[in-house]
Image (cartoon, helix red, strand yellow):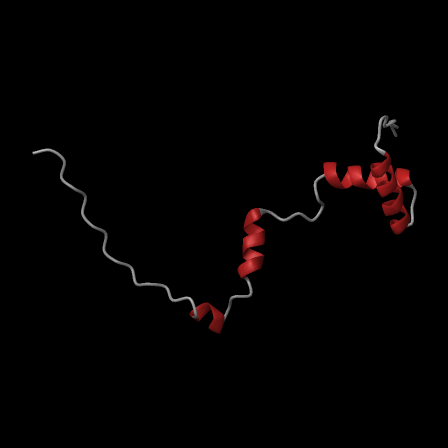
Length: 84
């Protein structure tokens, strides 16, 4: 594994990192690794856009589905005549 050194880090950021690491029960170094991992690697259980929409509306079955009436289709109008 690689290691990095972060220079010129504000004291307030360092203090916040230290407190956050203590809350999680690990070192500042581990906390920094976790922050970098969460922000740079894709989420393992991230669902796609279509899946999220499906999950949001999956509960709309039965009577709730009938609450949203679907209007009857109308005949399409004829295309305009261009030219003489």
